[in-house]
Image 1 (cartoon, rainbow, N blue to C red):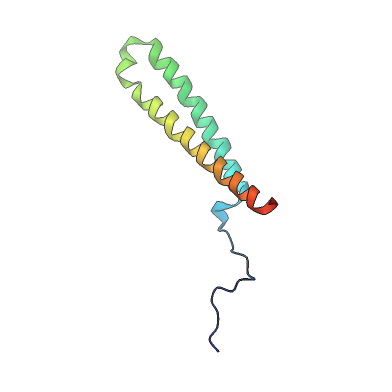
Image 2 (image 1 turned 180 degrees about the vertical axis):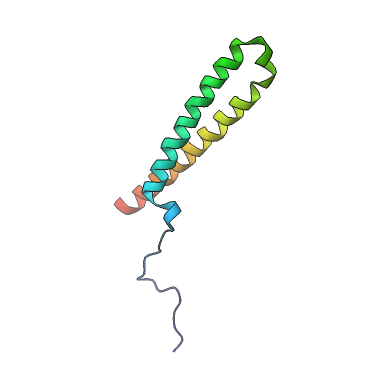
Length: 84
């Protein structure tokens, strides 16, 4: 009888970098990056010589915001799977 590598009764082990604690830490860090980039957008908007470089903090805000949304959706899905 062959050994079943993926039995039904075993729970899949999530890697450490996908744990709830690490996801929450990443959300907090990315939210701080988002706030920093918003401050950069306001600063680049105020100074005329930095107007052409406003794309840098805008891109940083978009990327950090998307990361926060993505990780939040992952945590919500994980919570819904465990409770329902």
